[in-house]
Length: 343
Image (cartoon, rainbow, N blue to C red):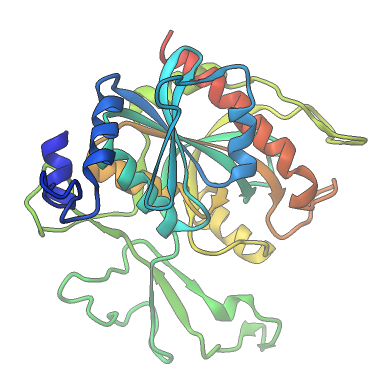
């Protein structure tokens, strides 16, 4: 591991005590001390309000020798959860932050698997606020080819012929989502169509700089099988005096989506659900999934629903009301998952 990190980040200088790259000798020594106790389960969390319930749980015991290591704006916390050795890191909002934090975790430390958890918007009207979802697949739905106005589904996209872009996944037609119509048909919209694109991926065991493509990223099969054992688990339903109609439950679902957009729009929610069978919508999970996929590290994400994206449910729909409840439910489900994964 030391050799790998030096290769990626720079060669250490024994005379100056600092690295020519980004990692000092002192930091490398701390990383080596941590890795001697590995491997670890990596726990990746988007924000502090989602992470704090885990840190405050009696199930988490911080490492007494090295409780944390700060590096490049990230704090990597070490300890045990349900007696399993873990490294906990907060990503911050967005796909970029999530990808960077995940890559740093996997490069610096001996990690045998990744659990990502947090809250999410809901695109599935069959589920309720507070429910905990565990998707089998994740997609980054924010990578588009925006088609020229006047072209349609039968016209080739720009740079499609050389393999950069594709029409295989599908598209969103903006004209379908406007109020105006002529003779019962949608009026053309200058925004035209956006076509969803797969990510370019470069697997760790692949040929360098030879790309592959991935739109649907599967979670680890064994992890997903273990997650079946928490289906039906129920969680708290009230925030102070505001209560949900029923106790939230854990459920495995087909797919989740991530992009750099906070989705609070019912039309787009319905599109994602009908087109791609999406349930949770967030801004990080697909980034974590893609990095783990390329590094061939087992991965799963657990997301609790904080709101019906765009409104329309029978209960109060403000994410601000139920975010804390959803965060706690995600933590409770994650703790149960860890006990089942490492009995």
